[in-house]
Length: 493
Image (tube, rainbow, N blue to C red):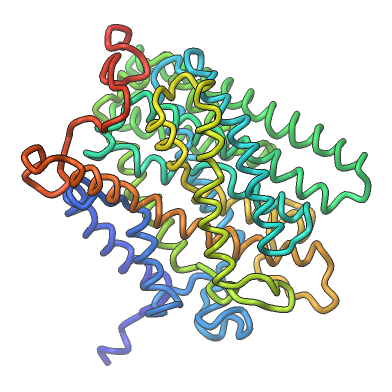
């Protein structure tokens, strides 16, 4: 009688397990961040892997279930398809890039556009091409497929960047100038990656070069990107004025004022996705336009909304990612004969070493906010790949599957002989998932590694009494001008 009342359904299991993890993390967050030097994403990812089909099998969100797609949903899958991943990543990354736009210092882009432009231009293009070369050589794909997969790995992830470079003891040791530059880059480049993605997709799907170039220029460059950032800036500016009016006339109370932040972020994502614009450029433009004059930041200086978003949405998404990692696709098949664990590991290492570091070192003298070689190494390394890459992978798969931005709910099944388009569909997801998983772990643990190395490099008499608990600025970086801020303290308001 009693046992028949227990309903361990997928949804109920999620409420139970996810809340237990988040409550536990919240109780020890300060200790985990400032003493263990860990952030939420790698911990959440590992929790998802443990609870997911690979180990305990308590959570199996995808259609494929515990033993892969061959058995269908009868073996434990919840039948949540690519469309769920797409919309979840769209909302979370959209909110995060909006948050980046809001949290930048006032009129930041007007003062620091040269540094951001170098990261969004030459550095991104180099990373796209070098990753495409590695895909082409290691996985034996054709050039358009290599360019498409590489585009998914081009952006730095705002979710991971925020978790690593903010709200921790370690982040206070990094010049704010560097943190703001990397945040601005992560907010912009999820959106500016769309031209790279569509370059490969149009090459595969269009019958002639003329058709590909026409669609690429009209749809991607003009409509999605140019109009997207314009709509975002206008939207943010307009709602800044509306909120000012409501505040000045006392039409809005404090809770609604704080909630306005999240509601406007979701509105910007909704407008972008409905109009077929670049969602992330709309969201970032809206956030920056909304807060670029510094008024909203000043009003919400004591608000912890971004940290709450990090804890709730971002951590939950990385648990979900850990539970949907396609382990069964990390092996050779008829469609993907060159995907093996060894090749994936080699590819991950090459991407981490060569995607950003060489370009930033070579261009250091032309990036005003990078002043020392150690800062260049730091910025080259901290370019994590995360949820934005997953969104681009799903978007690319959808365009190749059916020519629209809406993916098929269930995994496609192809028969021999396979064409290049089908091979591309089945190659994108496992490669991008593996790299995102690796980047989450490597970049998430990098703070711990840097803190430990810095601790032991000091003479014993100068080390912190608590292991790796130093609080002074990192060596080899310039911390002058407002403690390394984007502007001197005298200019801040």
